Image 1 (tube, rainbow, N blue to C red):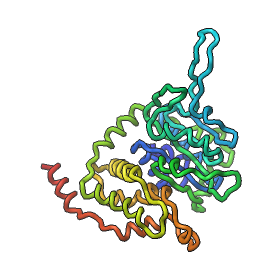
Image 2: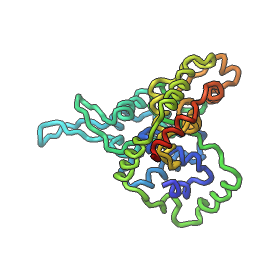
Image 3: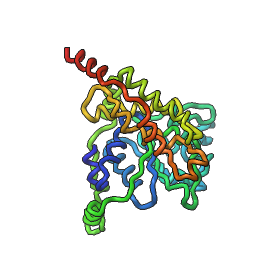
Image 4: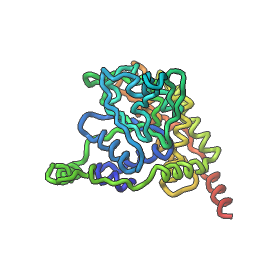
Amino acid sequence: MRRAVEGVIEGKPEVVRLALTVLLAEGHLLIEDVPGVGKTMLAKALARSVDCSVRRIQFTPDLLPSDITGVSVFDQQRRDFEFKPGAVFAQIVIGDEINRASPKTQSALLESMEERQVTVDGHTYELPSPFMVVATQNPVEMEGTYPLPEAQRDRFMARVSMGYPSPEAELRMLDVHDGSRQVSPLEDLQPVAHAHEVVKLVEAVRSVHVADSVRRYAVDLVTATRHHPELRLGASPRATLHLVRAARAAAALAGREFVLPDDVQALAVPVLAHRLLPTPQAQLGGRTAEQAVLDLLRRTPVPDPSAQAAWRQARRL
């Protein structure tokens, strides 16, 4: 899957790896950056690499919540209401420019992202498995955008920025995407995994061992965000859960049956930073939530690796 997506997204292996990590950790991914750097391309390439149902939602100011969740329509022949599923009823949902819709419409995703279900007119409908929302958004400073509410951001496991490609990667992009080819790399991308295979991978990730010391390390990191002087809103308990789940998936992708503190450190910024709100004083000083997380990584004591060594020895015996 990584090779398939990297064939479409040039020069961004770390971004592709994070997207797969979130998928295997049963999370949702928020891709934030300026227009034209490949946010939607990454979401579509990830969706096409898996043989599953995919729906794309173009968020606009006039989009209604019922367009996402679905609506009950009265059937004249049956003399009863029939539920028409909305665009969220898919295994991978691509939300393009999610912050161009009103907060009321954005909130239509809250239940589905957290509970994997949709409730309409008192009836609850289960969503398929696996289920993942890959949303793109433009920076809040751009025209026509609404800031995502804190509750919405907290439901995304990780946020990633594409960034501009290197000159070499941009040259390769011109060779592939300049229009001289009859079929674009995205259209040429064929599924390399089935949905039931992804479900098995997710189950395998759940069995990855997390030592008590590593769990404590994750809790200490998240707790420290709630007391940092430059942050007026720290990370929630859901952030702790997401951090441990993502660390499990990262360890599995590295071929390990156990999580290292390095896995937690590598994922701390993408998993925690988008949930944090800096104080006005920190913003005036040019400080960001990402810098606060890096500061906490330097301050928080790292667990003793001897506990992991003892666990590996026990596994070998």
